[in-house]
Length: 128
Image (cartoon, rainbow, N blue to C red; front, side, top):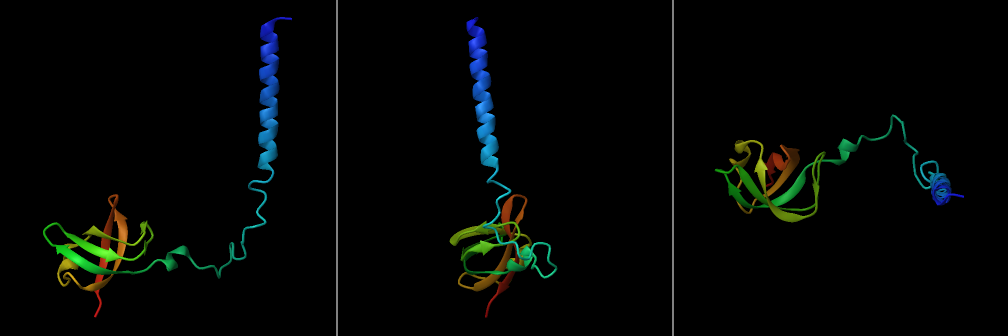
């Protein structure tokens, strides 16, 4: 027999084994959802994800009105489009008027969203 036929037969057998193994692995994949909790799937009582987002808290470290930016020492941030751990970071502000009544040392609540691929403060309130 021709050596090319042996090579072809070997490759075909290996491909068949690989497909069979792949099919066996798929049986426990998406169809096995025993560990998932789906009590409220499709329920009208389920809470929308957006409800978990809200104002974040921070201490103002610096304000740069010329550059429309604010440096905040903030806790964990979670918004519709931004999620980050606690840190001190400078952020652009969506509207320069947000900086009119804020100064270093102020405690603030803020909302941040991804605007033009950059985390941007869209709401800012000084706490008393």
